[in-house]
Amino acid sequence: MGQALAEEFGLYGGFEVTNEVFESKHSIVFDEAENRLHTIKAVMVATLANPF
Image (cartoon, rainbow, N blue to C red):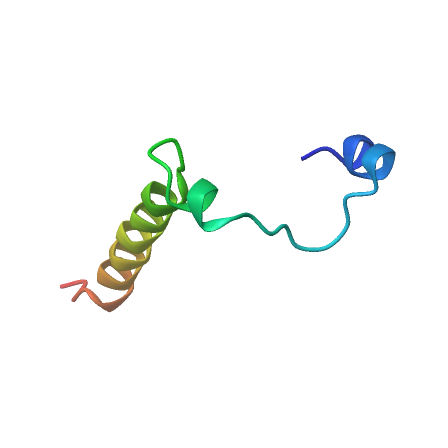
């Protein structure tokens, strides 16, 4: 979110949503969490892999 938009509407700190919004079929929270999981696993494999 842009800084100008946050300042205009006084959006500081964390956001809270209802369970219905969080768990709706339009929520991308779980997709983003899964993407993060696979990214972390890839970094771990690359870091711990035997270079020889």
